[in-house]
Image 1: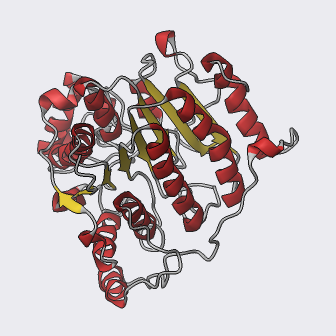
Image 2 (image 1 turned 90 degrees about the horizontal axis):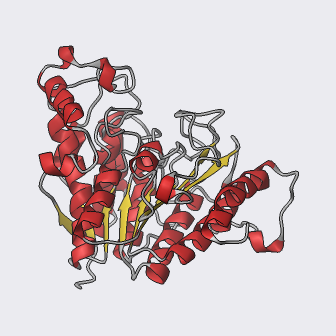
Length: 390
């Protein structure tokens, strides 16, 4: 194994563009890539591309008729079939949609292949993490579910246990659906409660079915949850499950939309807490998965202030060269941001909350506290199914 980290990148990903009024502005990918370069992280990772996901790869997760519908909408957006979730307000059709979505999927699959084969110990595709796409339809800004495809490819290559941890503010519904009955895949999602946020799924009672019962885990957090609660919930659920499952590979999704500045959700998490969870995922991969770690991006709609910094931190952690929170952002990048967006860029790689403090679950819990109630609900729903104490 080379041990070298890989950053999966292709300029084509910035063509994933739903139009000027859509919140998922591809400038977030461009600015992240430029910040990675400005911070010198290019020298710490191997920047590689990958083949676009082809028919056989896409069909590991997606139905043939859906792939054909995406191709048709990609060639003629006016002909998009809303029955497949295409041409909607969330997922407008655009020329080349199939091609660029296949590139993003291919990068995540390539990351999985590199980690499994030992070409890299860690690999990151921050353009990926499009976790809402279903086997037969687009959903929530997602056309092809690259996270599910990466996991399916790992299984195809011989992985017996893959753990997927999703800390996007939205429930990782598409990945859960893809492996709902598959005990080889443990899916854990921490997200804002479905009562208050799309996609209105991810209740703690959703635990999988058939042989996969107990392999789907959902921590539904109350709106307004901040750093201490978010980290408390993560550490009260995720490490114990990963330690029990002992995955061959850890796949993680790091949507930046938990941030208090994000315009589409209602959690109150800082950049510093996001960085802390990224570090925790890295450590879990080394402790329980032989270091094999595939890290993906996801949501995030504060496209200047939050997303580039959060994912640049992720790249640094993947590379083994974590960026110190107090790091001053290079002026060259800040000038790029203003030239590109006419917005003022942040000055440091922190929200000023590092180190983030939180209380561990082992010290006890408060049954009247809403955050603790969310953690208890998740533990009580799943832990006994896995032979663990709730």
